[in-house]
Length: 289
Image (cartoon, rainbow, N blue to C red; front, side, top):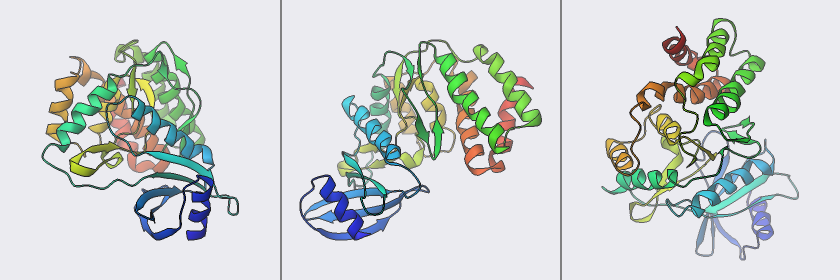
């Protein structure tokens, strides 16, 4: 593996020789390594089952968030494919630090400011990924249309193919799509979203500074992102208090929070199987009986 990493360095014009390499936790999808070159540390992700596009989209998301000048992300040095093995890899800045009493509040405040960075249309150009699943996207002038046709309907189609959505579940989800206008607004504001913000996709750097990692960016309703943070935990009361002090939630947020969480539960259903089926069914029953 050291040879693969050394060749990757040369492709990115990073000078020097590798002094140390050690595997680190990189989630369920990628292999990940701490790489020390002279006095500079890098975080490198590799994946033998994807093309370079997979990492290029992540790097693009990090750069877009960085350009908003609202919240920290690791510097993306670049994506290369090893010439001998064909393995794509993403080279990132190594981030390390310890949480402080201010970390959670800073995360809330800075995420709210990132969400206030606006775009011209909802959605995103081209295919992106959520986990290992490809997401078809386009830009539209309607958040309702985007969320219905590209997010929920996209997972419904995948559920047909994977035999995870059928029978009564299929009927209820189809009915929900037909009635979605009852809960999801047409034009709630076009906000920059991380797109996959669970508790494992942020980390702490020097002096307790929060960093976002592993984005799957899009432009949409900021409440869509907040709903996902509340699905699997990992965020404190201090985070939510700080967030809403900068960017308050609407009075009708609670009415659609489960509908926004439904997308991520469908993703997990299609990725990991029936263990998430009861949660999907509970939300469908709540809205359509």
